[in-house]
Image 1 (spheres, one colour):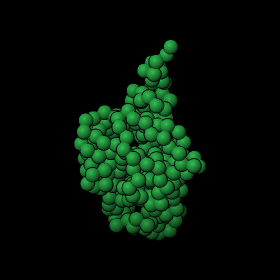
Image 2 (image 1 turned 135 degrees about the vertical axis):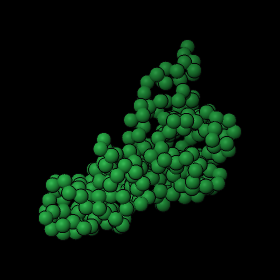
Image 3 (image 1 turned 90 degrees about the horizontal axis):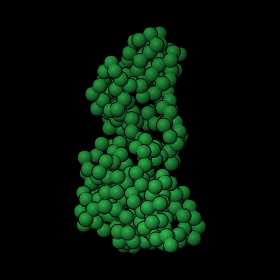
Image 4 (image 1 turned 30 degrees about the vertical axis):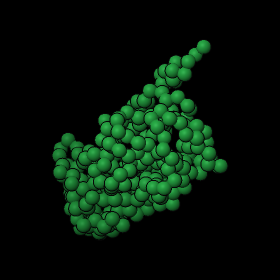
Length: 281
């Protein structure tokens, strides 16, 4: 007769995406925002993790990844408390709508989701206690906790980028100039129009947060450069879909560059400015 432990060991040998938590390996996390810790500030810190600024750490499992049924939760780390709830959130990028309605669950414990209609509510997991100890978080369907599922780092990043994509200080080229942020053309004497193609389809049309907008330049096919300063965020945002950001920027192009291809890029390798596209729960 096969034991529950043997079944768990067998299941863990297959990369089945059984873990509904994204970025659960908190010792070596995906951290596009460059947060100093998972509790460094109020809001999203490490990818997919929302901290309320005082007590609670959350991850929302998107409704499309939630089935009715029994789930088991597990983690590594002492002094940690966990709880769960399902809810329909109306405010994006802000964590759960309320701290009420959560039900406590132990490490290795189970809970049952029954939302009436599947794929209509998010499943929120909440932690408190000594959050610096939290690691190897896993939520999976079933009744027996299996060993933590280590997914390839590129796969984990792609899962995170459904909810947030950072453009910034990882795009310096070999010459020390910043890498291209967008490719496009010069519409008029003072306007660049271009597109940023996103590496993955985001959950929803993303919002843009910019850490600064003064460290950019426009490069032309004749190798000339125009400095861009004080770019307005609404100009940057332009037409945005789940796959594409279309932007327009006014700057000091000369007449000779009208109707020519051009690219928007970071001006130097300091790259103090970043663009963060967010489609978080």
